[in-house]
Image (cartoon, rainbow, N blue to C red; front, side):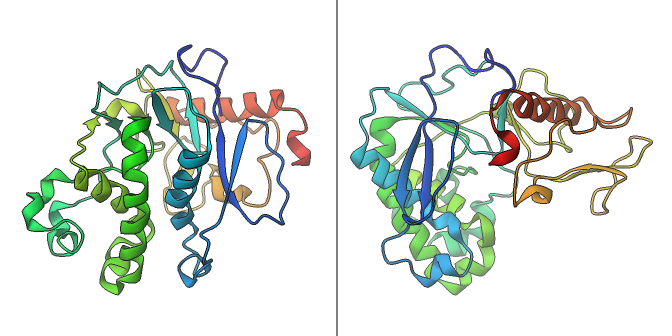
Length: 276
């Protein structure tokens, strides 16, 4: 989703929307799409609800089948909004990634050693990242993707790892796979902001609207309690947000205001918004 047509650097090619889906289902999209199959064995790992395991498998398929002319690939997600022109933050063979505070390889060394053995070096070689947002050379991602898939599956198969990492297991899978290939990422905190905790957009490039934003009418955050005013993507699981969402009350941080305005801009400009 773009907040305006100039939000992405002109060097960036059109975005493919990489989907992993049931071949019998139909889906309408407004961007160029590459549609990949679910994990071929359609195993219990995804049926248990951890559908994110399909992500590395989708990249493996796409990289094998697609004709990709660009040298670099940006991995982003549907809940990312571009708010400033995004340059290529990677530098040569060094990809760029956003550091997540909850990805902690060093604090999980016992588990990490199941996948990143001591002979590979200290676990601090594993970056505190997931696969998104990441800007990476296509040639490097082609090497990492199969390992990312296999490590993620091994992690999901291991009860201790599955319990410890939970929903972010596949993020650890990408981080470990990168380290196994000797790839270190440039950690860019300005790659992304996450309302309501990050208050200002500033020079950051992407809004990630993963957390619910709940406020009372005084503009005070009521996180963990449904607010008098709220925006939460989980309120719209069965369809898009309605057009013309109400703006937050006075006192709410700029990051949240910018988020809602961007959603309203999208709903006003995307054809058939209410029918998809």
